[in-house]
Length: 193
Image (cartoon, rainbow, N blue to C red):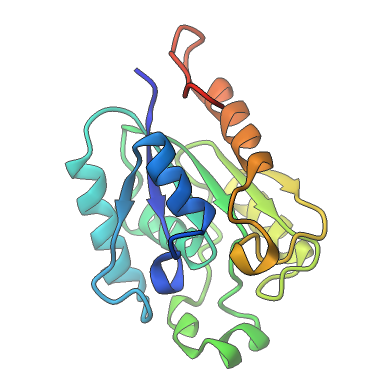
């Protein structure tokens, strides 16, 4: 069976035109819906992610964006991962320790410090060279600390609707490549990827 995607959104829960929402609809993904999507804490957001993982059958691949990436790395630290999580796509990780980030979005400061332990599953960090919420160098440091592969998306902003990434075809290519790397060769892949 192809792994089920688990969409892990950031602040505000990714709107209807965000690539995460479009992937949820296109691929029949599960979605983590936080009770308070504007005020993250490692404990409450991780507990909800754990609930969704436990409630979703089969092998899973987590797909985080922005503060959702922080949700995944905090969850891995607090829960030690899960045997059915086969990998994670970590897009535009937010640097909760960057002054400009938490001055614009004070709630993000509650996600600091950013965990820097290796993840217990393979991961791919996709970051932009001009993301206002984390420098490319910092995103690369995160990837190295997490034991993840790093891919630069070029000058792509925060890889969200505001930066022109509603539909994100390049992201679908990366998703397909990651699934091929993380799952056995006889797995049936997503139809259009």
